[in-house]
Image (cartoon, rainbow, N blue to C red):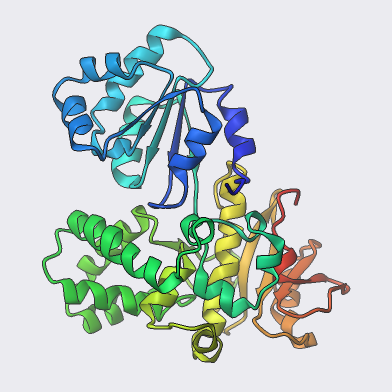
Length: 386
């Protein structure tokens, strides 16, 4: 069983809050994490129709049968249950976690949690595996193989072929859950929309362009995208904005939470095809940005990540929080270092009058310190201690 970095934060918060809520995409390991961390707790899954029916129709009996301490899986299926959990928690007046809730859809769950459990629950987000959670021997494989296999726990735990897994994942979860939430009848339009998003990884979102290609309105595109984001299929990287006297871009970039799914949607079937694909650089960038995203969430922090671009095309791929400032990070899929890779870092440091050291992440063997930045192979970044 793969040890998850977030276990440390989970152990601490379990002593501070009466309720722990773990959210994240389906198959990211939420149930495994909860059962491993709280082995003595009862367990009930609200995907089970019988359990769900009892929780909906007779919540008192349900909570008597599954009295705390208990793990309640997929709580978003019966969000009304959260009000009853609040009452029990308030009556017990304890800090140690008595309820561990998991959920796969942010919108339903966040609304219920913010209304009923404010101040009573710790909210943790578990995404697919990070590089630091994988076996070192595996991580040292070629980057194309990493991109093709992705980071879903079952692919690595059970050695499932990635094309097999992501096809089933798409058909079983993405189509079923997301299309249901969107009330989409046109399956072809939905699949085209997802494939277009995979082809625009690392690009700023252009709603009108997507609207024209998919054949639906721009407001509908925004709605679809918000549901994909709430279902942990994609995430947005917002632009960094400060009044530096420059015209800065204001549109967010789009990335996939699971790079393996994006590779599947692009029709790529082998590691050799990954390396040759015109979008290889963007796929590599997605992997690194997702690593930074996981790093922050595994420590129980808000992502707080940005990118920077002005209208003169000066750009920083990623701004990573560092106290009250940000570390400017450039991401390159190249295996060879060039001085001009740090051009954007130097520009941002001068613009912001920052003395914070920058970072270049690439796939080369040479790791060094320059005057203004560290140069690191992508396999040696975002470690839990940093």
